[in-house]
Image 1 (cartoon, rainbow, N blue to C red):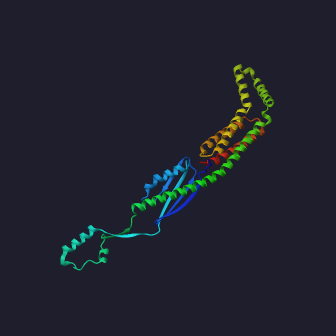
Image 2: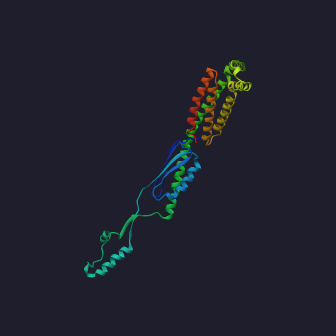
Image 3: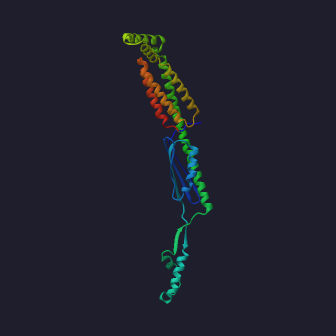
Length: 295
């Protein structure tokens, strides 16, 4: 399954009868899936179907979807207000000879407010159903195009992230192979530190002395941090190979990477290990920044 970024743009056009249909979709980073929908007046009934299609394609991202409808031709019809016309004719009959008895002319009727209404012809049920189906079909095309763009960016991001995970693994190997981590060197440093503690042994009870020595021994080795880094590298590699909506899980691993690098820097007794730890922090920050773009 391919990775997807959360940024993209797509536009799709279609025609149905006298309507020209245009969908524009924009997507940016988001914690969840948030759709902002702009529909023309009178088309709110399509919102449920639109949201269903979007949720079937995406799981994260702030999406803005805009539908534009234009008419290639306008059909008008003249509608006579029968009640108003009957009222005018009744008044004319009531007035009798007071008004001109000649038949009413069309221009006279048109000049009377409320008698004749010129309005756009409404679509029949069949035409409206065909138009709505075309709108949703056009949306499906736009969503497919947006998904392809997000996947294209996702593939590029996957290469970047894989390279950064490889850098993390290489820096962990540098820390692991550093001479300061050899048993002999650890024993030497530990002996020096214990000797320093023993200088004030008269002021320490045996239990406190054992606790101090145990603490020094714990801080002397980075085995646990290196093992956890290796485990996180393996997990990140597996997720990148698996694909799909893995952004949140990679973000969690980025936090774990950062925690281990901080510990390595704080426990380091070697300039080379400290330098590798700082390089780790730089790469991990870059990794996490890129992960924020993933679905």
